[in-house]
Length: 478
Image (cartoon, rainbow, N blue to C red):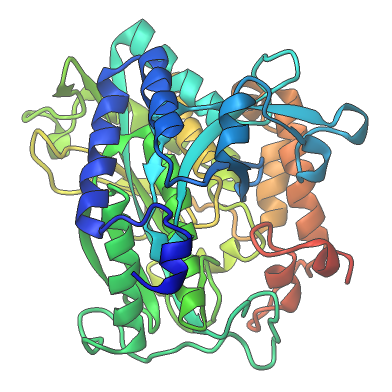
């Protein structure tokens, strides 16, 4: 231990031990009640002297992750009264009703790799509450959590998801904030799918990020460069939908931090460069009841059950209305380009990767539905809520038997997607009028800062005014 370590003996756990601890925490979250989890970790934090701070996370209406570091002692003493100024968060409360509460979700606790997050910290997710402790309407994590609990209580369903999140590694720190359309984002390698060299910058980045994710209990399955140069994807195991959405946020956070430590930027823009494949967040999901995958039917078409096919039909029926949820930025509509395996056709297929929904080859345990049209910058809590809410409660697919089936496509620009979203009674039904209006207003503000015809050059406006990138300085450059 060096001199600094002797002066500050904060929590610094080896990766293999971290993985054990985080997998145990994930297991406990399934079998222990909320009260039992709170008692366990409150006691642990009270006794563990090497922890200095608790990082509490929440996500705004557009999907941007926010973090607050609380001194451990203050956190434990103030657990029932953790408040923050909601008016400082885009899409949250108005200035005259600013204070909101954070309600800790003890089952989401993670023990952190100190080389990525710094020593002496743990991280935990929270739901956002009003001052009177009722659920805050614009907190989609809280909405997803309640919907998952309701599905389980009313139908006995357990909802699962596993996303496949693609991104690009580009040269320079803060490359997106410093974007110059004439130079573009500088890709750090020409290597791609299966043929990137073992120790090039992209591989080293993937190795470091994947190691940290495994230590966080993600149970990574495969980590590799993707088709486009400088593109990456790291796949992790199926889990319940709230935890899956949390892991999406952590995945992107880890990638960004590891890239920054290497003098680079991990970008989750759907289409940061023209002429190559864009990035998606293919979202695999399924339902279980009494431990059995109810999407599987050995005699069903493509091995799927009737309930699975009904869900597919409802997603197709409402595809254009929910497109703005899945593709929530100006830049996302560049990705829906049929020249590059674009999942922009409103149809389902076991083979055609241009379909918005694909049926992967599967057996009983792995039978699932894959929504391919989701972009990596979408709000993961809102995405999973919308998939399940639409699939279970939407209108059945309407087919006209007297007309020949025509190809249908998703909107190819954010303005059309916004128009359809705003006029949808179904969106009002599943999100509520206030959330619908609020979400659309922020998407409209971003759309208004970019030309309607984007052309072939990726514009500065679609990068610096992006909800994951912009800040006060950038937003006011308009």
